[in-house]
Image (cartoon, rainbow, N blue to C red; front, side, top):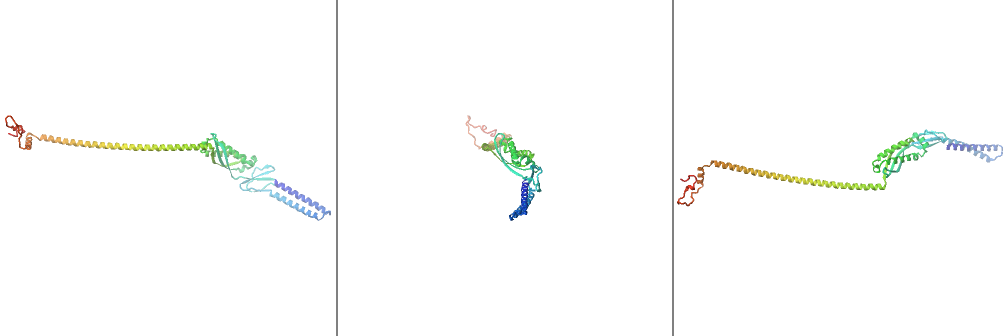
Length: 335
């Protein structure tokens, strides 16, 4: 539209200069002007021609547009928006139209949100969004939401989606539910903003922080858990030592029992052997005595006695004064 205004101004200037030249020429024809009038006429002629040519140059310069790569042009003619965006190209346009170029490249937005968990604890969470306007819906997006659609739509929707998702979980589960929260927020924004013409390419959680009170409570809990773990380890070590001592004591006991059993068995075997030997000797002696007893008769006994006799008779006093050898000699050895 500005091009048309400049074209009109220059065209009027050209006409004015042409009229001035015409008047100066008429005056000169009447013989009532001097040399200054000739100069004025020439200047007016030059201005008229120059303004006329410049007006068309301005008109021609405002009749085309170049849309850079990654952009789309939105054309507005006398307040009426053309709903078909202009693609990346050189394009001749209506001189009375205005064309504004908008980026359709991916945009990265990093925002921190102060949300509240299910148990009313503060959660400071930072999201990073990769998004871009839908090229096919760019004109509708701008027409219905102004050119500052990123503030009007995106930031409002993202804030609501993040807070609505965080409040579903207690603060102790926020860190573990990080992938779930990220996916849920991305799905909500894709459906919410997609109908307006904003494409959500990726959403990610870059940082999560909690209140000082909760961080202190977490540290205290970790200290208690560490202490309990150390105590459990010490108790486990004591149990292992006690078990090892019991095993060693049982081993010593079993060894002592085995030694005692071995010694007792050795004594039993030794006693059995001694008893057996004695029995064998006794049996042998009994057999020998039996054989000797069976083999002895009075004659043999008498002979054995004589073999042992040294030839000296014992002295006995009798009433008759004579010794009776029959009292000494066995059997009838003396006759």
